[in-house]
View 1 (cartoon, rainbow, N blue to C red):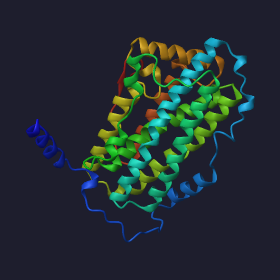
View 2 (cartoon, rainbow, N blue to C red):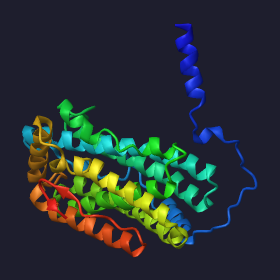
View 3 (cartoon, rainbow, N blue to C red):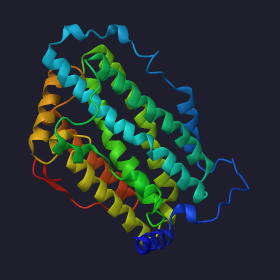
View 4 (cartoon, rainbow, N blue to C red):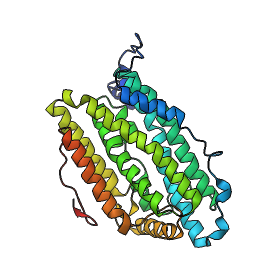
Length: 316
């Protein structure tokens, strides 16, 4: 047992992380090197909202909906909370990365606000579920957990061998871009006044998140080597194939199993009630257009994405 313990400790000591490098903090530079991102930070500080005070909760009438609709909607909003809660840990992890790589203070400042925004997204989704009958802590069907558990950004952010450019391209310019399009669509198909207000406020925050990613890539694209562009391509492809096409944002894309079918039915009932979800028939063309736009914008920066395939979408 003693020899085994020593072996494990020795192995752990050989693992290189961002924390292995000596800390170098000074000189501190607050000069703006990315003015468009500094403007996003300033806009975010001016557009804060409070889930407790700024949502017109008094306009939500749970009794106006059937029990089936309330049960479906509370699961839908709980699922939204799971995804937003996971995002809370991404920003601090990336903040560490920004500091270790001495990235412009504009990036560090914006992500300090992004943490708050993701936190309030999680809070407001949780509160919506509570008011519809009670927040649900995890997927009812265990088989569905692998689709919504994590996309691995926190781990990647702290891995010294994973390029930051690839993380931002995959997380912000891809996953958050898709999320923004979903929320934009939800503002059109959601009729409940409180649900509509929530998706509009989240969409407004998400628009800044997406802008950050594209501003960042546009700023650095001329200095990227072919090898770096290839790594970015690989990161984005992995996010689309392993996360998005696995149902992270759109449950109908998840592998077919009882858990997925239950969540799809949940969305259908919630959508029918106007409480904030959508359905495959409406969302599929939006998803395809999202990928097409991401591919075009990446291509303009010299980052080329291949075609993707999915049983429910085909080649796109």
